[in-house]
Image (cartoon, rainbow, N blue to C red; front, side, top):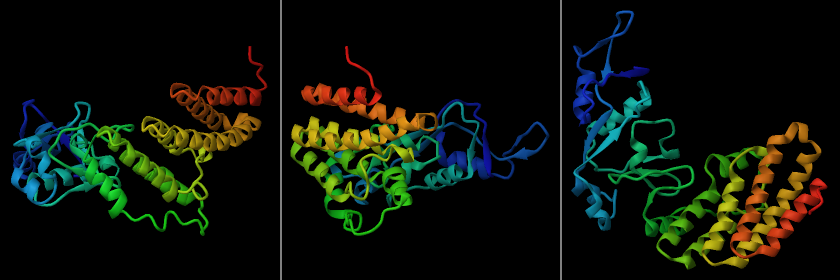
Length: 319
């Protein structure tokens, strides 16, 4: 069962528990081209019944979401997927008997697990919780979240004391972990954006300020394009969220510090362009977006300053 073929001849939703019962039955097999008989998954649409009472009782969802809880959810496996892996099989087996009596939390949106679970995730900062509410998470949007609960986790549950210290050396592995694999800045910015969704600009700014305190630029530079992560886009997102929350001065101050770092990197990558084209382009994209944000939110003088500075670096004369 390193991989299990999907053999769906019905094209209709069936109970996940029935699908797993057939999978485990010793007489339920399909033949491969070489004649080998193998176990299989009989449907791409798998019904998971929802125990509404347990969902509330065991804190999987707050009672305020009670009206959103359906009697069942359907996990849909993509059409272009011809088999499931052993980790995916494990998850289906777990859910086939799930009574919603304890939370199931996943890191990285479930990683490589692609059996329809990503449509039912609730953002909790460091992880996603499997919930019976359909949502859509993307690389840019966290999808379904509880703003109040998320704020409480960031402020009172998760501990940042060690991260915000500046009396230790941060090597590339720390940068890789805290700015790449699981971006700490992204946790704060995502929570701040949830505050904006409920029109709470004060707490949005509070979380962004907390981000700068708990992920200090002294240890975790605003620009680490040389490592090839997405950290810089998180910083841009922070700047934009400051603007959207009405904290224009804080947005501009952060943008200036960020672009100052970017220009240092840009000059270096330009000097070594043949070997660092990708990194130079990344810097250019970030600088351009910072200028666009400044333009859009009324800091036109600074936007022009950024563009002039970049052109001067390239030796381009403005018309």
